[in-house]
Image (cartoon, rainbow, N blue to C red; front, side, top):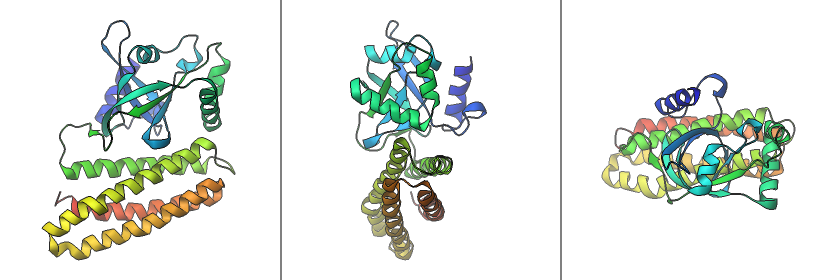
Length: 272
């Protein structure tokens, strides 16, 4: 089955797949069967939401029935999400009323295909919020990683997300839509949280253990401070909504961040 092939490719390549889904934001959602109680895994497109949540849509290609995974969530709202590098448990909330309509409208603005699916069916296509159950970083999909492997997985996730956002901004026309603004602000917040964790957690420990690396750690911290300013500037431009302004700043951030991540990995991975 095609679904099984995509799942296998997704898991084998840390969330990357080829063919028609290449470059798409995808996750694997494993639900508990409403009738059978057995696990059922679906490949879904998703959108970042606020506070670390993500959105999935029960479009079923505009078909007359809700997808099986949606019925499963109604019966058992707890599910497992695989993002590629990471796996976490999430609680599903089905949006209703004005909140559903406003959220769906912003997703249609981001991708007109959702609107076409809605026109094909008489049912109201559901929008579901997946909220991580546990606070803090998710579990690495590969099992029990070293700190170094965990760091590389986080960095890889940021590299991929920024590449996606760069493409979305470049093709967005003259103005950023509401969902694209959320995408941008979400990755900015994620980078801020990650660097704060490194600055207050990892760096002090390494300085205490390896005082001979003071110059290198100090330089990495200086990178954090510089990138924090870039993130502040980018967020202001995102809120302004002009794509041309944002694209240049995204390119600037990608260039600075790529150099920083490469340098940080070269220094820290052997130690972690």
